[in-house]
Length: 208
Ligand code: ZN
Image (cartoon, rainbow, N blue to C red):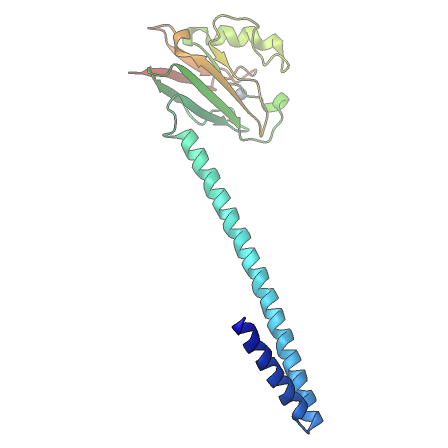
């Protein structure tokens, strides 16, 4: 209440001062100057507000990017050792020539990401885990399945795990149990797209 009363008194005093002046031109120019100043201040405030808004947007964007980067790192590195990621682009190769998991994993999830742009029919990739000595046989048996059948033979017991066949920009995951692997057997992951299996492959091992 006391503040409000004080402001009223100040306003009244200012009004009296403004009305009391005899020189109307000086009064007018003072009023114009005040109006200009108010307008300038308003513009500055608007600009400052806009700048602050943009800065906030930029900060939010950076925070989001940092979060994404951390999520990718966590998935790729030290997050869950039983969760693996691997990628392939518009060439016939995976980004990793081998994958390994600890024997303590009860189940393993592998996510394949196609970082290229070509469609699945031209440069399809999958991630198929089979005993190393069955790679060629499984790939050959899958030829007739076509894209729709992921270039995989149906119900083939040699296939431990397989993602879908994917094209550029897509990803697919597969989850399997380490109990599906046999001790003393070498395992290889391979892409069964025609022509890829002979070079697009890597070793899969279970650590101690
Ligand atoms: Zn491939």
